[in-house]
Length: 422
Image 1 (cartoon, rainbow, N blue to C red):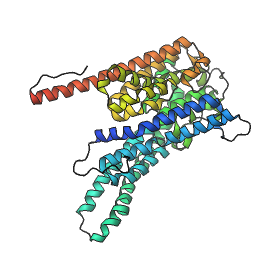
Image 2: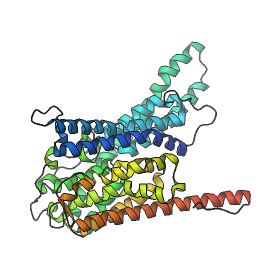
Image 3: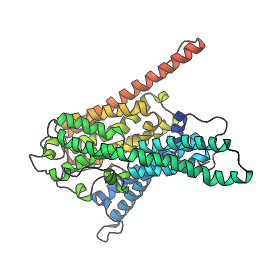
Image 4: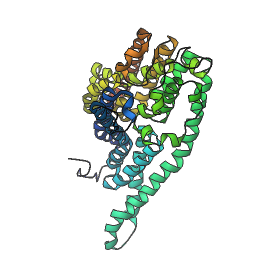
């Protein structure tokens, strides 16, 4: 049974929480498939993944790697549309499907990441319910019901939800991304530990969205020297297929093949703690933490997670080890109020430890595959470990407190003693 043939909800509409869980169930295969395809491409083709698959100078293995990476890019590009469509469908049934897909695609075009898809799905679902209810209250001839259901309702709903997404989200996003890009340049000249914490927090704040890409692009640009940091991030830059696909394509091919020395005396050198690659070490350590931590948390307290989240844990741990931060998205979609703050806290810790301890990386991707290019390897591993443990502990505390509160409410209502799950 697919999203297209699942019976639409009729009498009882699922709440937003349940709709988010529906979205997670449809999104998980795209996260896992896209992440592993990108990792396979990086393993087979290395820095050549951004080139054409039919490059005559490449080997057959390299061609396969480029092809796999591009397929993974396409899978990641579908995250926001699929999430928005599933959430909207869960909220409104079939009337939410078209506006959900369209609004999710608008979110992907803006480069808003999974948060934009989440918002777009809720907007589309609520708009579909509103428009459907309004149309049902209007007295019209029977012959108009078919055209209204096929054309009228999807058209009005898409205009309402998609217009809000493009008109209300796009302009503020451009302002925020530009300000963040400039702010990083200023912070890089003052405090290495502070910069590491900020970069780490940005990496985890939207798990592959525009804020994540600003931090990643800044770190990759630090390998090129100060000149690479002079172009602010804009919504237009984030709207390209490369930027929407994942962290590895948020910079140019030149950044992927940059020399491992940066000019001294500029923001790049300060950001790197005086050595090229420091900012990249902070970003990569931070980006690995959230998927690893959430996979660990599901093992430690499985009762706090849904069956779908528990099944995703092995894939999340593998994706985290390969620096595919999007591996944590299913958990964040299901419970953003608790997962995202915990991820930001742990990733900020990892970034501060890595940059404060002068860890460096000479490559811009790979996760555990990039350890060969790490300077102060023990510091880098410590940063990932500490950040993972902090995130896992924060998630368990937050989810555990929610469960205890819910148990107390049930106990107060029934008169029974509250029980806390093990």
